[in-house]
Length: 184
Image (cartoon, rainbow, N blue to C red):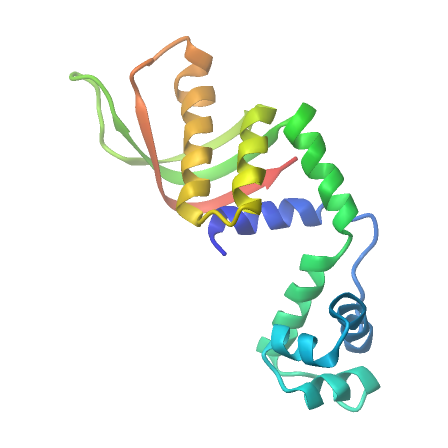
């Protein structure tokens, strides 16, 4: 997963109407309800089937930190899929998304203008069309660079070109992301 994908995941998690299970036993049971077998859960978490059975019974209550993080990520990835879907649909049809980022932006522009990349902090609302493209690309398994290109195009059109009112030949490169946050 890349930075854009992580930011979209965090934005979806903000839409949860209930918190995911907290105890290890409840998390393992939730994963079992979704994946159906202890073998599938073990493969997902990268542990033995026996470990999953111990976690489920409560014989082991404190897995190593890296395993606990994997359990948390697996539960969050499957938590409230209908709520996530509804939020994505709203963003892609009516609301759009807001990108807040601090990243290095470079330009290719006509002679006489600067093309030196520099750090900028931007908060820009992108229309639903960009949200739709971003979600569709993510669902099709697009890599981080493809997602960055979609975000860069949206920022280029909405912020740098101001919706077509200025800098019509400006091309923006979106690199060196310090942080990125998405909300919808």
